[in-house]
Length: 489
Image (cartoon, rainbow, N blue to C red; front, side):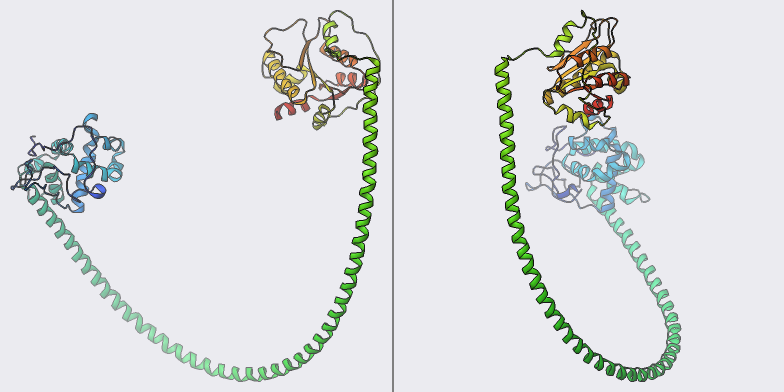
């Protein structure tokens, strides 16, 4: 169906986003852009300004404006993507029931500012409008047609005399609104008359009730007057008792004043005794502080003497710094030499299952942590492969060695060296038992190699291992204590 709206000289390029000329983007709410094409004298847009000034958009009734936005929102998704202005591309993706409600202002602004977009929308709308659209294109409006629909189509198509069509539709809409207002006023007047009649009936009933209530109130008033006389007699008696009570209160206040004076004197005496006690406590505290200073001086002198004695003993024995520890000798020789039964003192440590004990033991100077590898990994993360178990344990022990600075040795069962081990962290020694020997025996050998007096901590939940290392003076702890320590790290 051909369009009667001629091409405007100020049409924007496709895809450009021209801002709405009016505040809020409402249709017909403001003047068009400078350079816009005003309509000709017969009502159509001829593309030529009159006296150099564009004719403003008509003021649309609200139902007409809403219908224009609804028609545009309905055809918006059907337009090709390159024909949809940039501001409306996001609106076109909305759901049908949200498109006109949420994007109404943007649609209205674009219809006013972009004649080319309006022509494209008009082509789609006329296709759906059928005979009514053809009549509007010809500049006529069927008598039975909806005036709002006719005005919306006339605004979009803009045939000759389209402003008159909009004005006529607006007058029809306003007439319908006025009729509805008059009908509403009539209904309200009828309702007010009904309510007034009802109120008169209620008033008559209320008047009867009030007369009955007045008789009852008069009767109650007589009773209240009698009660008032009785209350006055009671009040006089109460006032007499109050005077007697006031006299007794004055007497008791005198006694209380004397008691308060006695209490104040006793309080002053107690404060004096407290001041004397505080002075005595200060003297005692000063004496205790002086005695403590003497004890601290004695303790410092004792420690200084022990330290100098240790330095002198090291100088006398000519002990040079060593680069190997006792466990290193065991690691070098345990595959070549048979295990030798050695005895030793059993008074170095006692068994304990307290997980916090591990941190206390690792805080001891030059502590040596020996770990039964598979006993710990199978208890803590047995669902992993052996290689993953070893890697996770060795990595965690590296963190403990870095935090505490202690010597750490982990022992695994194995007839030969395993492949695929991660790089050994600094401070961690990894040992595998030789063929025919268990990790338990190697752990006991490591414990026996340590000098008496050095704190050695063995982590294993094996009762036999714990009993064996305890006899040689080590501290046995359960695997759970180390697993919790690793989890905390």
